[in-house]
Length: 368
Ligand code: SAM
Ligand code: SF4
Ligand code: SF4
Picture 1 (spheres, rainbow, N blue to C red):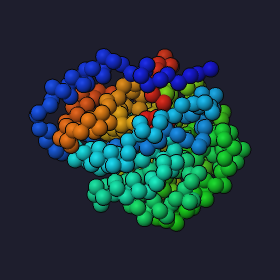
Picture 2 (cartoon, rainbow, N blue to C red):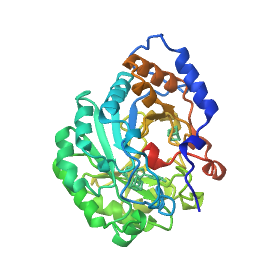
Picture 3 (cartoon, rainbow, N blue to C red):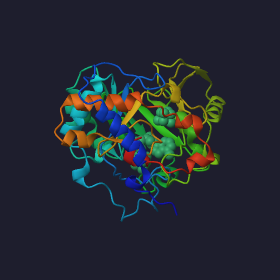
């Protein structure tokens, strides 16, 4: 049986020391505000913030039940960044070029008064693209408050429209009808354009690809089909389980003709396709078969305030320590800039069956 490797055993002490030394050496030097680039010329433009490592689902590809069981130890409340701490760190990121913030987890709607955090983040700037990814279970209840608090839009994860398949994927017997209610409530509240994320796992839910495309065609909602990834070390990922984006497009295109569409902006992870009859668009996220590391502009802030520069990293940089030690924003800005400037991550370009087995942070901790 797979087990979770504790973060303290996962991370590389040598790497942590190297980063800490670089940050310490930069002390006293003022960090200019404005955009920064990493070692591969990629700007820092997006920030994903994990607000909880808990979830009410046990999706087979993310938090398998045999690993995340009843006795699983989630982070204690005191370890989590507070809303004030998150907002402060986010504001510094925005000063360094971040234009888009996504709240994630775990399940972000489980964090108490999440709409209050949205309100605080919105106060950073009206032009900030502020979004949230959710499994939709609590969305029908929360959509209006989230919109009123200033959320721009939502992405809802939904792996099948077939109730039995969906219940098997979330593994807590949660009905698909409730997620569809959440999607309707979000659309009514104006959290649009709404995206629907479907992780495709061969033999588990790939029969749902075409019905999913058909169901959302013409609604204005954009379904994004995601290749199943080897995130973490507990989901038992195998290359054979991946349905390549090319195959997904071919399967949909065989009954609903598609034409390629241009990306909206640099770093857009989804490859866009339009229905030839003008009834909307879909996207495919081909992180496994067509790596997009060359354009990856995303930083991730973990639930306990560690900065990760790649979804497949095993070492993060502890920003919470800087925040709680009473340092000013300049120290925070310098630390983030130093970490980003020495970033060279490109895991998806290197992935093999062997690297997939290497120890990595779990998705539910680092934030999807
Ligand atoms: N709980 C929320 C949800 O499910 O939308 C937010 C967190 S979840 C980790 C973020 C996204 O990551 C979801 O769309 C989920 O489907 C996706 N995801 C999780 N594990 C994955 C995997 N192994 N491969 C590809 N996508 C994955
Ligand atoms: Fe929970 Fe989202 Fe992971 Fe599913 S994908 S287990 S809903 S965090
Ligand atoms: Fe970005 Fe890392 Fe994914 Fe490459 S593997 S796209 S660097 S998160």
